[in-house]
Image (tube, rainbow, N blue to C red; front, side, top):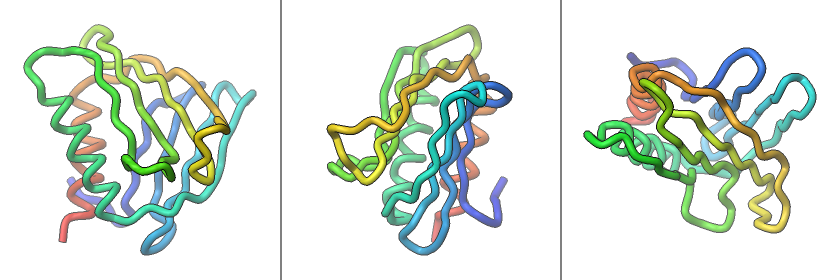
Length: 134
């Protein structure tokens, strides 16, 4: 499955986070928790950084042992999004940490996203990765 605009969205209903390409080296990070807390900011990321993130997520999701893991969009200090996953039933629950402007001392939003089925997660990150492949 490929997509027109590269994007990744986790969660639904009361808690979700989305990463969408805005232009060549700019991505939009949005999130909402029960309409009480929200985040919406632009992050300077390359397509290669996001493709590597998607590949790391797919690798963790394909592991035969369902263990907790954490992945950051980019290893640099300008990292706007970290996902920490905890096994939950047939999927993973996520702890999301957003940092606008790559400021390690500021956390825009920390939130939890309920369990997401592992097949759905593989589809989401597989489509993101495919949409960024040359």
